[in-house]
Length: 318
Image 1 (cartoon, rainbow, N blue to C red):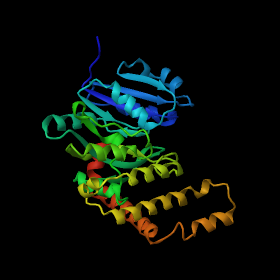
Image 2 (image 1 turned 30 degrees about the vertical axis):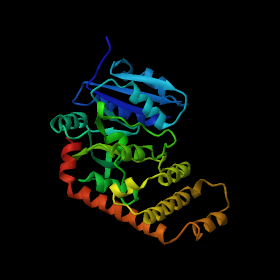
Image 3 (image 1 turned 60 degrees about the vertical axis):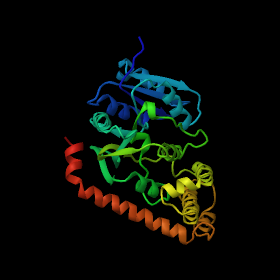
Image 4 (image 1 turned 120 degrees about the horizontal axis):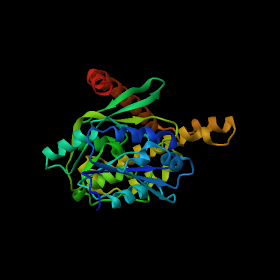
């Protein structure tokens, strides 16, 4: 008989053996137990598969391992979506962590709020420390439209959609663009919000774990950003209260900043690197404004974390 869980969880992974099993432990620890986790191994060349087969997760029938050649994270997420046969779908990246009550809290939210096709939640930007997770910043928002405005214009953190979103499967008509990997989650949310209302759980139920190999500031992401913003139509700009000229300047500034961040990986002389860093082609008033905004965004995250520090400690240290 085919198993029909209440919630399906889509987890793509590529060479994620170092982080995946902490992520899966946070899934297994959920207080809501009627779920199936579909793990799509996207052409990994590390020990992900063999380690999984030797782990306790391999004997938990709720975990399903799907192995494919390397097609990119967006393709992997779509494969997972096509395999879901549940009432709800949740997403989780292989290097993020859920609070034990994450699924239960969002499930109850959606059961009590039928106007919403899905919901997200607040999250903490954290790091793995010798004695556990160290929480640096809290990303909290109360309006989806305002949060999307800030995400699209680089004025705020993303919604961590791949690890915070839960949605009713019968409302999920959109898929991830397989042309975009670094920002496929951004386009997915733009498309989703065109015809759906998404609610917000005002509690940090997920951890975004910072590490060296994150995708969004990779030089490989530049073409993704260029393609996405070039094809962003006027209806989206109006919906999220964005101005084309100002947005284009911010996009160019952000891509310049990515180039600066990735200079250390160039096989060039020190002199060439210095010339590139201080080049007027890279640095301009928009880049400087973006750097200031990044600083302000981080300060805001620190202040919000301090404001809710008691609730965070009660939630994550209990």
